[in-house]
Image 1 (tube, rainbow, N blue to C red):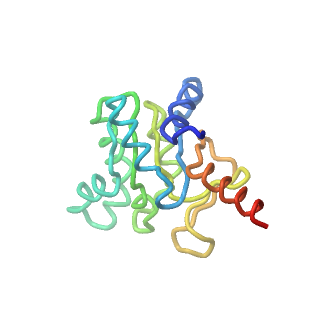
Image 2: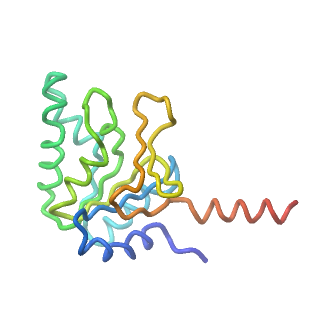
Length: 170
């Protein structure tokens, strides 16, 4: 029986204690269980779970386009700091990839993780040693070879099970 995604995240938390960036990325496509895992961890440990799209958008709403790009990183840091927790769970981070904000999402998350452990649900893929978001050619596409973060892949056990079933049915 495979361990839950929340258990896998909890198991790698100690790996960040002595690292420069205390960043854990839970990587996987939509419906891979990332939100459910973060919700489970929030309930179990009383860690704050932040819907980044909602929280950041609310703060950016009254700003001009230029102000949004300049202040987005500081606002997100304020949002995380206001949670008064050593571990902050970030969900729904797609807004960080918006071209209008002119941010490097991985660098932004790394910066947040200097003062606290950040566990973020990354809506993309991790193949080999490369972290990606969106398909190549998409305006918001990102590619990070060897990212400085602990990676937990969502949906790995399900994909392995599907491959095993396909081999058995051939």
